[in-house]
Figure 1: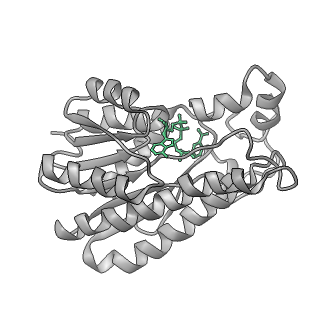
Figure 2 (figure 1 turned 120 degrees about the horizontal axis):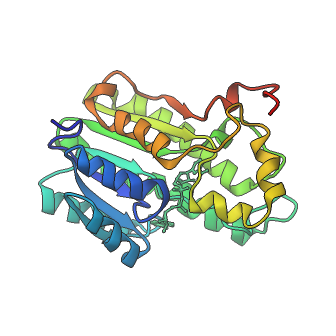
Length: 256
Ligand SMILES: NC(=O)c1ccc[n+]([C@@H]2O[C@H](COP(=O)([O-])OP(=O)(O)OC[C@H]3O[C@@H](n4cnc5c(N)ncnc54)[C@H](O)[C@@H]3O)[C@@H](O)[C@H]2O)c1
């Protein structure tokens, strides 16, 4: 028996990084998965590796595109039980507030903040139709702690995702819809590895603050998402669900 038997899950940003891992793991656990991503080809590849999944191109910043994604998933599988709003970006031109232009700011807000807003706005009604469900909104540890290596629009967007999730969790609790903000620490995915590039100093600047002395593996975060998607988390709602290896608990970290 799988932990997600019979559930229909829509995962955005499912062609790469943690979303791709989740699509494969969730389908192994019995879910039917809509593998949604702006990158059509990569979504097709990821869906091809999953047990029961179909690819769907989506731009989470576009309302029509988001509506079309949910309509396609509901038509194919007969309804939707879990929204895993994972798509997010962290572009190089999002930097210190002194450097970041309005265009760069708005690009990140469009995908990370408006994207989650649209995915909840148009996805939650499908969960209500089923009499309940689980929403996992991916925020970040940067919603809780400040970084001197700033990406100001990204950080602000994740704060918005966290507070939006809390409010939705409260609003829909009596209708059976749970909404949680999954807050990973730094994870070994293309999103973060792009920032480090070939720069060991940029990596070390961050690693020193991690109590565990290493980044998370994608699967370590996706395992938490699996719990939040499943009925095992039936009393977890409105949570700031940290999977950060103790980063936000730390003052002084161990020496190597
Ligand atoms: N990697 C980390 O260290 C880390 C830490 C905390 C939170 N997060 C968050 O976790 C989530 C997943 O991150 P990741 O590291 O796996 O990223 P990633 O860059 O590896 O994958 C993100 C995926 O989202 C897709 N995407 C980008 N824009 C999109 C759009 N407009 N519409 C639909 N899909 C789009 C990309 O094509 C890609 O497949 C993001 O929300 C990210 O902010 C990541």
